[in-house]
Amino acid sequence: MTIARAVLPVVLAGAALGVASHVAAQPEGNATRGAALFGQCVACHAVEPGVHLTGPSLARVWGRRAGTVEGFTRYSEPLKRAALVWDAATLDRWLEDPQAVIPRNLMTYPGLKDARQRADLVAYLKAAAAGQAPPTAPGGRMMAAPPRPDLKTLGPERRVRAIRHCGDGYHVTTEDGQTVPFWEFNLRFKTDSSPLGPSRGRPVLASAGMQGDRASVVFASPEEISRMVEAKCP
Ligand code: HEC
Image (cartoon, rainbow, N blue to C red; front, side, top):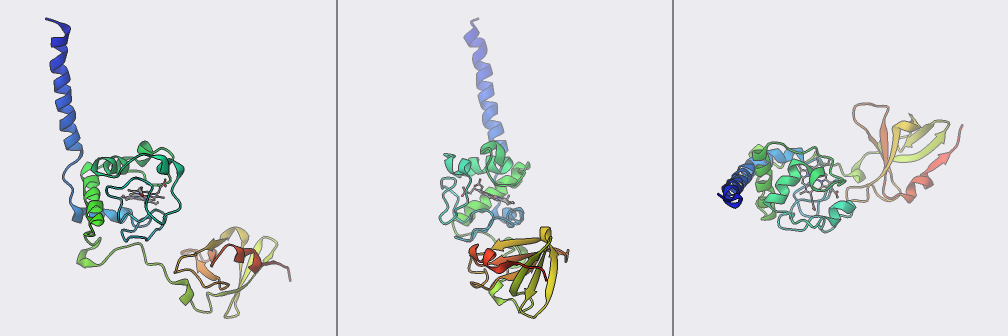
């Protein structure tokens, strides 16, 4: 018996096994279950077209080249360079281990080990691309990330009139006449140029969660920051 004959059945068996495990790795997905799982993504992704958060809108990624969603300007170089088209197979691998598929991409998500859950998410993204994404919460209500407030509508106690820097602190005066001191390390300066951001020249004070000692001042654009902060001790 020749070596070729002995090897051939092994190769065929391997190929058959490969196909079987490939099928097993991609079970049939269910978009409704995927909608519930999408709760893991909503902090960074919306499925409405054109709504970009930390990550791009996923409304139309299905069948599209990676890194090409219109209006999203913050893709990493590795993702832009990856010659990948998003389909069932590539999305499955991406969701299992994003860093393995595109090293040094900027999606901070550890990956989802459960193959069926990945298939459900893939089915959800496919339905979203067809404009048929099932609601992400029971009762038909969209469970998006907690809605961002429109910063133009905040009251005088949140509208910042002056910021003074002295020593290691900022003293923030709001339009209701209150002045609150912050350790400089606890105050962040941010910009929000979206339609929900503050009006030009009218920055607002946003608290950072439960700790009352931390806050952010949100400006309409970066050049307003240095204009507003005055170095002055009483
Ligand atoms: C902490 C934020 C964050 C979370 C959570 C997150 N993503 Fe992402 N995602 C990103 C960022 C940022 C990018 C762009 C990465 C880059 O440019 O390197 C991205 C990119 C993607 C892309 C490629 C988009 C394109 O235009 O090529 C897909 C698909 C995707 N994410 C799906 C998901 C899904 C599904 C989930 C939930 C299971 C998820 N992401 C969770 C931040 C996140």
